Structure formats: structure tokens, C-alpha cells
Length: 250
Image (cartoon, rainbow, N blue to C red; front, side, top):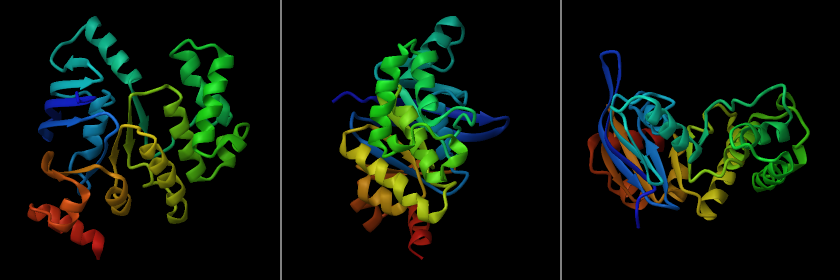
């Protein structure tokens, strides 16, 4: 099976700080992959480089057959990055909903303004995706009337409404109160069961253990270990992985 995401020799510098060091990885369609590691290991930066929210310093990024060589600049490259972003749905730590728009308006905004979709069709797709995340009943509410978990579920519906090939989650539960984390993870489990390709930066080890097909461990901007959850949790090879997992078990 051809990979749907292929990252080759990715480097990222912030000034002189070398944040990602020669990172290469692949994801196949329908795979759920969790990125774990200590804070500052480069997980979120890696995710943001995939859809060019962060400008990579070197390497090649390919999503669903669209290949962008980081070193190449100019108009053609801008078009490639635009097309690549349409293939990726991004869910952030903070929900980034438009406060002046209702739930349904937040979800139809992208399909209408970016994809020039007819409003009736956009509403139909939005309602379907709000149903998927259990938020259709709140379609006419405004974000300030929603809990953090509800906002995040709307943000997931908004990303899904664009019909992405891959969903990228950047610590989607880290801004939530503990009692609200479960409702977002439940939605993500459901998406995994539906066959959604997902790359998830997370500190939720229980979720990673239960839902991920593969776990990738980052340390100091490099992939130090990867494998199936049962292998990695029961028999981590790298001392840094062992220390990381011990921290979560304590």
C-alpha cells in the first residue's frame, strides 16, 4: 500500500536552534499514528511542518501523492502548499473557532470560502459532520455558550467538512478540563474505527495504547523509537522511552 504521508529528511531550525533533525516517516491510509515525547521534543513542530503552518528548513513532504520539496520556492510551490493543505485537516490545542459565528457557520466557512461550495451543499455536509461528533443539537449556538469539549468537537467537525485525506491532531485535549477529555477522545476513537487516517500528538497514553496502530517516540528532534503499542509499552528499547513511559505510569 502506498503511503498517504511521506516525510523525507525533514529539518527545522528556529534561528540557530535545530528543532527537527533529519526526520523521515510514512503513514499508510487508515493508519492511526500517535506521536509521543517530552515537551520540547519537536512533536507539534513536526505536525505543523506537514501542512506548512511552520516553514520547514529542508526536506520533502508528500501528502496523497502531492510532493513539496522544501528548497523549491516561487508561485508553483505556493500552489502546491495550498493544494496540500486541502488534503490535511488540522485540529489544534486551542479550538480557534470564530466567536462571532454560530456552530454551523463555523463549519460551513471553509467549504464555502475555500472550496467555493454551494451553501446548501455546505450545510448538508456540515450537519453530517456535526452529527458524527455529536454536536448537531448545538448547530445554532455560539462558541461562548459551549464547553471546551464541545468546542473541540465542533473544531473536529469543521476540519472533517473539508474532506481531508489525513487528520492532524495537535494535543487536542491538552486545553480541556479532565472531565471533558473523554468526550473528545471518544469522537477520535470513532473516527479511527471509521478508517480515518490520523496523526496525533498526544500525552494521553491510554488513548495511544488503545487506538493507535503505531506509536512514534520523539526526543531532541529525532525519532528514537517506533512500533505497535503492545510492543512499545511492554518492552521499550530506548532509555528515553522507558523514562517517558515510567513518568506516565507513576
